[in-house]
Length: 231
Image (cartoon, rainbow, N blue to C red; front, top):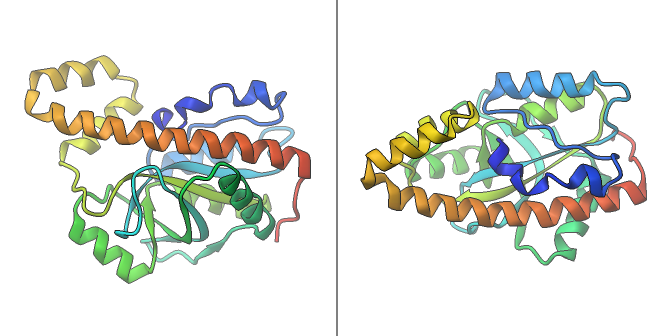
């Protein structure tokens, strides 16, 4: 979503056009459509970096921490995806350079928003994953099928203990559909939501900052080091 990469608007300019940011939208279908379009461009991307927010599946992680994916898993039983080893190391170098707290773990992509602690804990135990998102696996799956090296880094925007109210998913979809004013007016009409929404907005800003620091350093290093082989 745009909120996840809001602070990366200048990336194309700062990289002299050698990098660009594509917003996929929420969920499998939108992610696959967006990445398919991207990979069909001429010239097509030489590297795919999948970034965005994720929910924690472990009490080990805090808001703004990064999860550098070793493997990508999906709740639908699709086969695990291994990230490119060289890009994994470059991503870790960029994280360390910025001193951002992080873990190296498997990440999980779910078909719907995971809101409550008990479900987060169940998924973490079942899949041995540290974080969950809605698009990551599908972005990287498309890259893998196209033979494009990929890596995934996610910033934690909500912790395991932080249960999200049911209306959060509705607000996400409204914001994605560019109905920002409707979201604001709807929230003002329901003042009981405001404390939770303010807390979530603060967490999003912290996650955005972590992604911004990491992504800008990673892109600079990737351009300097060149393109790895797909393995």
